Length: 243
Image 1 (cartoon, one colour):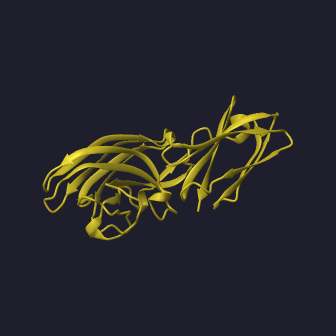
Image 2 (image 1 turned 120 degrees about the vertical axis):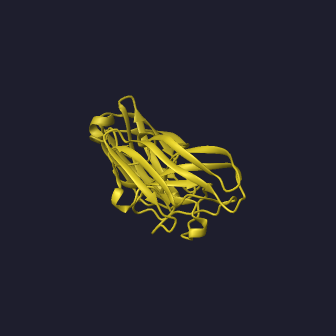
Image 3 (image 1 turned 45 degrees about the horizontal axis):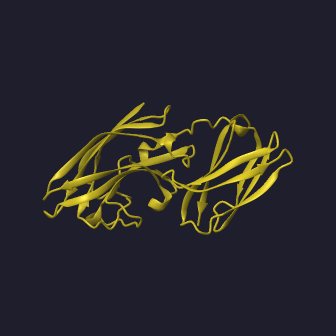
């Protein structure tokens, strides 16, 4: 288990900042967390939320994001958890501590290297202006989190598949699924977004000789999704990017 304590500077080298309806910030503060790479659990997350210019704020959200190194915005990041904050007054600050998140709960997250981001009053656009520093990393470049997805020992052991290919990836509209199984049967195909919300589901017929199926992504917004196949033996998930 790795425990990290950082001092976060407002003038971060790279941050995800949003156009907040209220003047809140995360900056010039102490922050920290503990990460257990064996279990995928991030615990003891703590930081402070600041209210600027004596305005205060009511009913806003704060979220914890897991950000791939290749991400260019919040659409490419994974929302692990969020909380509602009833109010903050004047130039006050609120300390958030003892927050625990489990990376394994988001099916779309694959094994890889990530960074941890705190976002307050978050939306989906990006800026690097220090005046509107509403989102900031609490793990710096040298403190990346290495995550190993549970149950990733192999497709055959997971649900009796011999082939599971998803292409093209990234995709704009149609995604092809090339599936072969050790026996003929039906699997359930679920598509979920980054929060784990189910956006589509359908049964697919699979066979030992292979089967070809298509998913229509044209109605979905751009972002990252998980394609999960499920049968009585278990499940297997692959990540797709909708452009």
